[in-house]
Length: 362
Image (cartoon, rainbow, N blue to C red; front, side, top):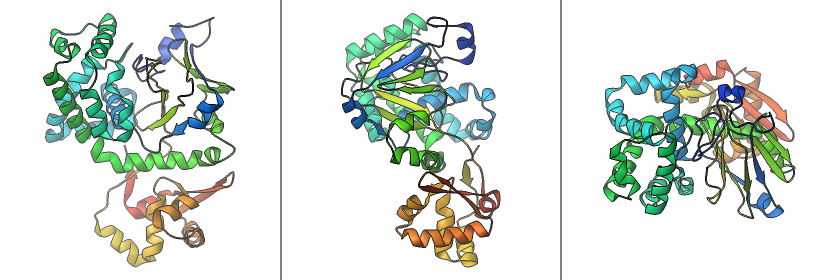
């Protein structure tokens, strides 16, 4: 993995701001760049995932735990993990394994984030179990050249099934403790980010998605340039590109080290305002009594943001019905509405969030 700030993953490649300032890996005195070369077929085969990849979230969240002081917005999440003895006990072995196999840099083996993760955690862990011995040996040898490995890792490099099973068990336990309890708010946050980007994805095309990914990304047809830790070229050669949102990524874009693997970019979502439900289950019933079941359902569905079309889809109702309810909610000061291109995007106001019994996620 290689990225630009999460961890240098040549299995993630990520330069930290300090490393950029120091000129690590600079070419011609400038910022090093990952150049992704597209053909027309690649553009047609490029897809933006609607959900995070569970194994990338495991990996990136483990970085956040190690540097929580640098991300105070995650203090509450980290505090929960550290003070809940049951979750902490389940989390511990996975954290220790990841601290060795996925150091903050400069290299992390790609086998920890197989493309099968797009089908869910089970599929991703099964792919890790099936990693060929030759690949394990090669990637761990590359890791050892940059970060010395303890002797107990050696069986993994030999494809030891018992070690692989232990690894997948601990990764699952980590996910169940650190990620799964927050899955609803993570997905709502991703949906909100997608809603803000939706107009540029709808028309005129995928190229606008690139420009929405921030100042570290530049689309110079037919090449996408991403500020990276090293200077590198990735030729898609008709394979297309999978672009995956990440809740736990912070400020950088990540990719794999091995260019022969299925191409992927992991990008951090915009964390404008994320809300987590706190109120008791009876709160929804009280809300329905106050404003009616349909209007309450629309308010709840807005979450961290949604377009009119998305609300209609989520609630299986008509656009006209959604528009009527959002107009009333907006007049009551419970939501805001703004137009981006042809899309109308709705978001909760602080008053609307308070009425739902929501607080900021982290």
